[in-house]
Image 1: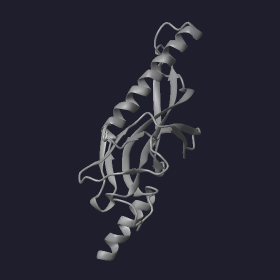
Image 2: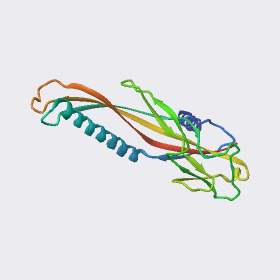
Image 3: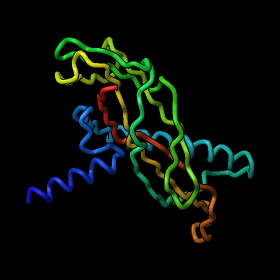
Length: 200
């Protein structure tokens, strides 16, 4: 039974793009953002549908809002470990137990990530975030005691989700008319984060 548990743990770490049995890394802190992700998907979709309605009214001089039928597909994947921005090549040295990095999203440079979607290709820019040795930020990651007085870096791994909606429409005045394909709308959101402290 123990072997099965270990294999499951190893598979889970590999699926996140995290090397297993790395002696120079700390435990991995994983944060679930699925609730926030649902709100972000809904916000982006509503914004896109509002723009689509306005465009339809202008282009076709319609007298009412079209009825839309939506089909979806979703793809979720880890981006792979990236060194957070704002760090020197030599890393930072922490000397006090309980000290650590602060991390803030949205700064520190970006990298490109592509989703495996079969309706329409989707690529986004993902922030590495900025690591602060002073501990300032929206996340705090404690440096393990066995890494004190050593040069360390903070790494982040994002779990991103893309959701695509196929939009169809027909006039309200003719509910028996066939659905007409309009376009594909793509929304993206972070559904998780993981952080890892590694010795330089």
